[in-house]
Image 1 (spheres, helix red, strand yellow):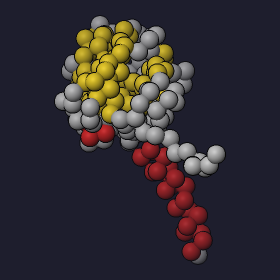
Image 2 (cartoon, one colour; image 1 turned 60 degrees about the horizontal axis):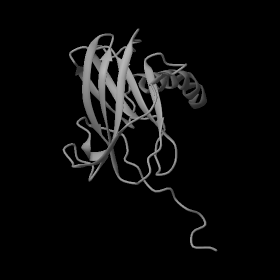
Image 3 (spheres, one colour; image 1 turned 120 degrees about the vertical axis):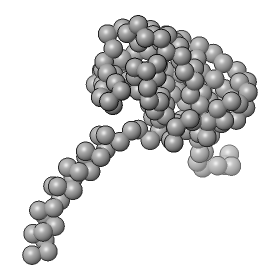
Length: 168
């Protein structure tokens, strides 16, 4: 009897779990709701953790105010990477550089855009995005770690673990 009950509830539990996964915002990103009273923008790194001297991707996900994926017909956003003194929103910007190239639309998610870059140092990073999405002006700043304005954010850049260490 116990096995029958467990088997009958497993599909239900799996469906509930999948539904939670689909509607839960990405944990390694920061979501800002109501940007320019038009969009919910989610910013972070495509893959985390991010390591110094390893390729990384800036990640932008666009949703409407109800949280549904929004596929823009026109997007003209420039992304500036910020290297900060610390992971606080108002931290001093030590260096900044516009990321080269255009945001590329993700093939599997038409509301998701990426651009490659190479963080060269460990520490606090941020992004300043500026431009338009379907004619709506966007100008926002996002900071890793404790610099996020939302409850969760993307991680700062760390050192990769070397193994084996100290051998010659």
